[in-house]
Length: 114
Length: 246
Image 1 (spheres, each protein chain N blue to C red):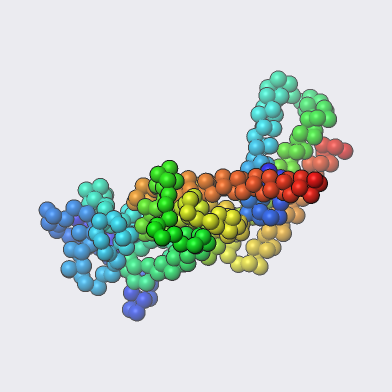
Image 2: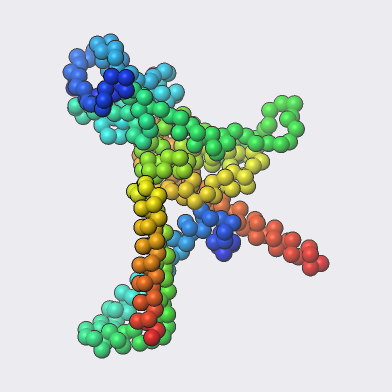
């Protein structure tokens, strides 16, 4: 049913639900991240590298980044819609937002999986 | 009692200004509307709407000390001086405290605030069970004063797109009416991203409603109905596939 609501048939619900689901992913990851951080307590560069060594953790972190980018895109797009009345300026800002989020996502993917 | 009132007459004034009044109240002046009518006796150029003077018609909604409300049911003893009165925000000012509510009512009309029932009319009224009737409580009482909608920043920024709390609550009122047959169409009507989903649950609408209603809860329940609609579509699609495969 959730998948049905994420289809083009429900454009409003799709954006709304995506923002909630991405928040849920980030919340779950954050709990695990804090717990892992408290257990491992990485204190220097090598320890941080080890912290991100397990593949499952890197995939989870990537999932977190994807959710963060989606969440930020939907949220900031709404802020632009509210506070930037000029359509041309808003269009430019929307494009800048998408480009910068893609850059962050590709960068994060490269750091985690390269 | 001291008042500071927003004044603007487009025929005379280039821009709005605040006018101060110092009023000697009578013992019978208990509500803000009583004081406003007293001011109007002294200065008949002041414009405001009023009608029932008992919180039923919703005409005298205005911004009172920064919060929307009805002048006729706001006690003077509850207000801090100077009492600052402005027109409701987010709508064009016609004059002084009178705003143009066209956009508000256009949004209200857009949700089809009437029963849609294609069955032949019965000889008597369309009956409801007491349980079905109870579902309308907390919804039908809305007097369309506009206090909630004009407190909502989502309406301020997108008045032509976001329906607003009052309109959405009335949309839900007809969605849950057992006599209505247009639930799918009503949900479809709100699916455009900005019509319903611009609500960010900041609860201004709940805080200001003079009838103590909860438009925010109605908006959340519309989203619940969306989930139910999607579940039903999925079940229908499943049945369709089963029938085909048989």
